Image 1 (cartoon, one colour):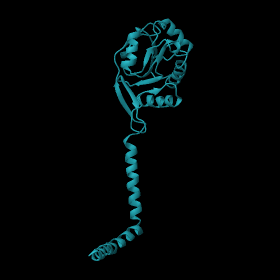
Image 2 (cartoon, one colour):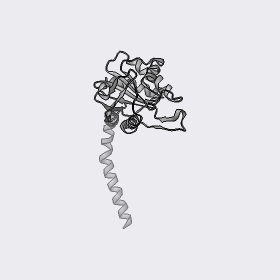
Image 3 (tube, helix red, strand yellow):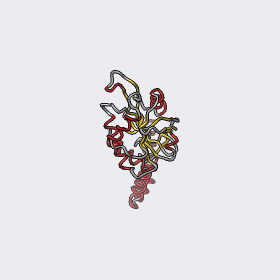
Image 4 (cartoon, rainbow, N blue to C red):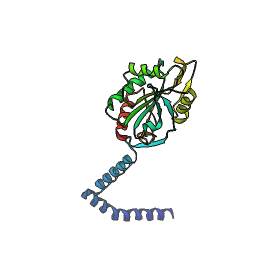
Length: 230
Protein backbone atom coordinates (compact mmCIF):
# COMPACT_ATOMS: atom_id res chain seq x y z
CA UNK A 1 0.00 0.00 0.00
CA UNK A 2 2.84 2.34 0.91
CA UNK A 3 4.47 1.55 -2.42
CA UNK A 4 1.39 2.75 -4.35
CA UNK A 5 1.33 5.98 -2.31
CA UNK A 6 4.90 6.75 -3.33
CA UNK A 7 4.04 6.13 -6.96
CA UNK A 8 1.02 8.48 -6.73
CA UNK A 9 3.03 11.30 -5.15
CA UNK A 10 5.79 10.91 -7.74
CA UNK A 11 3.24 11.15 -10.54
CA UNK A 12 1.75 14.37 -9.16
CA UNK A 13 5.20 15.98 -8.87
CA UNK A 14 6.08 14.91 -12.42
CA UNK A 15 2.85 16.33 -13.89
CA UNK A 16 3.32 19.65 -12.02
CA UNK A 17 6.91 19.88 -13.27
CA UNK A 18 5.89 19.32 -16.88
CA UNK A 19 3.34 22.18 -16.57
CA UNK A 20 5.29 24.69 -14.46
CA UNK A 21 8.92 24.51 -15.65
CA UNK A 22 8.31 25.83 -19.20
CA UNK A 23 6.38 28.82 -17.80
CA UNK A 24 9.17 29.66 -15.36
CA UNK A 25 11.79 29.39 -18.09
CA UNK A 26 9.68 31.63 -20.33
CA UNK A 27 9.34 34.32 -17.63
CA UNK A 28 13.05 34.20 -16.85
CA UNK A 29 13.82 34.62 -20.50
CA UNK A 30 11.65 37.72 -20.70
CA UNK A 31 13.17 39.12 -17.49
CA UNK A 32 9.66 39.21 -16.03
CA UNK A 33 10.40 37.56 -12.69
CA UNK A 34 13.45 39.64 -11.82
CA UNK A 35 11.99 42.94 -12.95
CA UNK A 36 8.60 42.49 -11.33
CA UNK A 37 10.10 41.34 -8.05
CA UNK A 38 12.54 44.26 -8.04
CA UNK A 39 9.80 46.80 -8.77
CA UNK A 40 7.59 45.27 -6.10
CA UNK A 41 10.41 45.36 -3.55
CA UNK A 42 11.40 48.93 -4.43
CA UNK A 43 7.81 50.11 -4.29
CA UNK A 44 7.27 48.53 -0.88
CA UNK A 45 10.49 50.06 0.46
CA UNK A 46 9.56 53.45 -0.96
CA UNK A 47 6.08 53.31 0.57
CA UNK A 48 7.50 52.32 3.95
CA UNK A 49 10.06 55.10 3.79
CA UNK A 50 7.41 57.68 2.99
CA UNK A 51 5.15 56.74 5.90
CA UNK A 52 7.27 58.63 8.46
CA UNK A 53 10.42 60.66 7.90
CA UNK A 54 12.48 62.79 10.25
CA UNK A 55 11.44 65.88 8.27
CA UNK A 56 7.78 65.62 9.34
CA UNK A 57 6.52 67.82 12.15
CA UNK A 58 3.92 66.92 14.76
CA UNK A 59 1.98 68.91 17.37
CA UNK A 60 2.58 67.66 20.91
CA UNK A 61 0.24 69.85 22.95
CA UNK A 62 -0.91 73.42 23.46
CA UNK A 63 1.09 75.50 25.94
CA UNK A 64 -0.65 77.02 28.98
CA UNK A 65 -1.06 80.75 29.46
CA UNK A 66 1.70 82.65 31.25
CA UNK A 67 2.54 86.23 32.16
CA UNK A 68 5.89 87.42 33.56
CA UNK A 69 8.23 90.44 33.54
CA UNK A 70 11.11 90.55 31.09
CA UNK A 71 14.54 92.16 31.40
CA UNK A 72 13.04 95.54 30.46
CA UNK A 73 10.30 95.25 33.12
CA UNK A 74 7.67 94.73 30.42
CA UNK A 75 4.86 92.26 31.01
CA UNK A 76 5.22 89.41 28.51
CA UNK A 77 2.45 86.83 28.15
CA UNK A 78 2.07 83.92 25.77
CA UNK A 79 -0.04 86.21 23.54
CA UNK A 80 3.14 88.23 22.86
CA UNK A 81 4.32 85.27 20.81
CA UNK A 82 1.10 84.82 18.82
CA UNK A 83 2.06 84.38 15.17
CA UNK A 84 5.68 83.70 16.09
CA UNK A 85 7.77 80.54 16.15
CA UNK A 86 9.76 80.50 19.37
CA UNK A 87 12.06 78.39 21.51
CA UNK A 88 11.61 77.95 25.26
CA UNK A 89 14.21 77.15 27.92
CA UNK A 90 14.34 77.15 31.72
CA UNK A 91 17.63 78.35 33.24
CA UNK A 92 19.09 80.61 35.93
CA UNK A 93 21.76 83.25 35.60
CA UNK A 94 24.17 81.87 38.23
CA UNK A 95 24.01 78.31 36.88
CA UNK A 96 27.58 76.95 36.89
CA UNK A 97 26.98 73.89 34.71
CA UNK A 98 24.71 73.50 31.70
CA UNK A 99 23.18 76.99 31.31
CA UNK A 100 26.26 78.60 29.72
CA UNK A 101 26.25 75.88 27.06
CA UNK A 102 22.49 76.18 26.51
CA UNK A 103 22.63 79.92 26.00
CA UNK A 104 25.72 79.73 23.80
CA UNK A 105 23.64 77.46 21.61
CA UNK A 106 20.67 79.84 21.84
CA UNK A 107 22.97 82.47 20.34
CA UNK A 108 23.25 80.24 17.26
CA UNK A 109 19.47 80.43 16.90
CA UNK A 110 19.60 84.19 17.36
CA UNK A 111 22.18 84.47 14.59
CA UNK A 112 20.29 82.13 12.26
CA UNK A 113 17.06 84.12 12.63
CA UNK A 114 18.33 87.60 13.44
CA UNK A 115 16.27 89.14 10.63
CA UNK A 116 13.09 87.16 11.34
CA UNK A 117 10.40 89.20 13.07
CA UNK A 118 8.29 86.03 13.37
CA UNK A 119 10.93 84.31 15.52
CA UNK A 120 11.51 84.59 19.27
CA UNK A 121 13.05 83.04 22.37
CA UNK A 122 11.61 82.78 25.89
CA UNK A 123 14.14 82.13 28.67
CA UNK A 124 12.44 81.58 32.03
CA UNK A 125 14.57 81.85 35.15
CA UNK A 126 13.90 79.27 37.85
CA UNK A 127 15.68 81.47 40.41
CA UNK A 128 13.55 84.62 40.35
CA UNK A 129 14.60 85.66 43.87
CA UNK A 130 18.03 86.43 42.44
CA UNK A 131 17.19 86.95 38.79
CA UNK A 132 15.38 90.27 38.88
CA UNK A 133 14.72 92.19 35.65
CA UNK A 134 17.88 94.22 36.33
CA UNK A 135 20.00 91.08 36.77
CA UNK A 136 18.51 89.51 33.65
CA UNK A 137 19.16 92.66 31.63
CA UNK A 138 22.82 92.59 32.60
CA UNK A 139 22.94 88.86 31.85
CA UNK A 140 21.43 89.43 28.39
CA UNK A 141 23.88 92.23 27.62
CA UNK A 142 26.87 90.19 28.78
CA UNK A 143 25.78 87.27 26.61
CA UNK A 144 25.02 89.49 23.60
CA UNK A 145 21.41 88.30 23.57
CA UNK A 146 19.96 91.15 21.53
CA UNK A 147 17.24 89.68 19.33
CA UNK A 148 14.20 91.96 19.78
CA UNK A 149 12.00 88.97 20.62
CA UNK A 150 14.34 87.25 23.08
CA UNK A 151 12.76 87.74 26.49
CA UNK A 152 14.37 86.77 29.78
CA UNK A 153 11.41 86.24 32.08
CA UNK A 154 11.05 86.34 35.85
CA UNK A 155 8.19 86.27 38.34
CA UNK A 156 6.74 84.11 41.07
CA UNK A 157 8.92 81.04 41.62
CA UNK A 158 6.04 78.62 42.13
CA UNK A 159 4.35 79.83 38.95
CA UNK A 160 7.53 79.38 36.94
CA UNK A 161 8.22 75.91 38.33
CA UNK A 162 4.62 74.90 37.62
CA UNK A 163 4.93 76.22 34.07
CA UNK A 164 8.14 74.25 33.61
CA UNK A 165 7.08 70.95 35.15
CA UNK A 166 3.39 70.85 34.28
CA UNK A 167 3.03 73.22 31.34
CA UNK A 168 6.09 72.36 29.26
CA UNK A 169 6.92 69.16 31.16
CA UNK A 170 10.56 70.20 31.38
CA UNK A 171 11.98 69.27 34.77
CA UNK A 172 13.02 72.08 37.12
CA UNK A 173 13.36 72.10 40.91
CA UNK A 174 15.12 73.76 43.81
CA UNK A 175 17.79 71.43 45.14
CA UNK A 176 20.31 72.43 47.83
CA UNK A 177 22.56 69.54 46.77
CA UNK A 178 22.81 70.68 43.15
CA UNK A 179 25.40 73.10 41.82
CA UNK A 180 23.88 76.55 42.15
CA UNK A 181 20.95 75.24 44.22
CA UNK A 182 18.71 74.23 41.31
CA UNK A 183 18.25 71.28 38.96
CA UNK A 184 16.66 71.63 35.53
CA UNK A 185 16.39 70.10 32.11
CA UNK A 186 18.80 71.07 29.38
CA UNK A 187 16.15 70.58 26.70
CA UNK A 188 14.56 73.22 24.47
CA UNK A 189 10.88 73.25 23.49
CA UNK A 190 9.83 74.46 20.04
CA UNK A 191 6.51 76.33 19.85
CA UNK A 192 4.71 76.99 16.57
CA UNK A 193 2.81 80.12 15.52
CA UNK A 194 -0.41 78.74 17.04
CA UNK A 195 1.06 78.22 20.52
CA UNK A 196 1.65 74.47 20.25
CA UNK A 197 4.74 72.57 21.35
CA UNK A 198 5.89 70.99 18.10
CA UNK A 199 8.64 68.56 17.15
CA UNK A 200 9.98 66.46 14.34
CA UNK A 201 9.45 62.73 13.90
CA UNK A 202 12.48 60.46 14.30
CA UNK A 203 13.46 57.62 11.99
CA UNK A 204 11.26 55.20 13.93
CA UNK A 205 8.15 57.34 13.58
CA UNK A 206 8.25 58.74 17.13
CA UNK A 207 8.13 62.45 18.06
CA UNK A 208 11.37 63.65 19.65
CA UNK A 209 9.26 66.22 21.61
CA UNK A 210 12.27 68.25 22.84
CA UNK A 211 15.64 69.30 21.43
CA UNK A 212 18.80 68.81 23.47
CA UNK A 213 20.14 72.28 24.16
CA UNK A 214 23.60 70.84 24.86
CA UNK A 215 24.07 68.94 21.60
CA UNK A 216 25.11 70.58 18.35
CA UNK A 217 23.31 67.92 16.34
CA UNK A 218 20.00 68.83 17.97
CA UNK A 219 20.66 72.55 17.48
CA UNK A 220 21.12 71.90 13.76
CA UNK A 221 17.82 69.98 13.68
CA UNK A 222 16.13 72.78 15.60
CA UNK A 223 17.29 75.37 13.05
CA UNK A 224 15.94 73.19 10.24
CA UNK A 225 12.58 72.77 11.96
CA UNK A 226 12.22 76.46 12.82
CA UNK A 227 12.67 77.23 9.11
CA UNK A 228 9.88 74.79 8.28
CA UNK A 229 7.50 76.39 10.79
CA UNK A 230 8.34 79.92 9.66
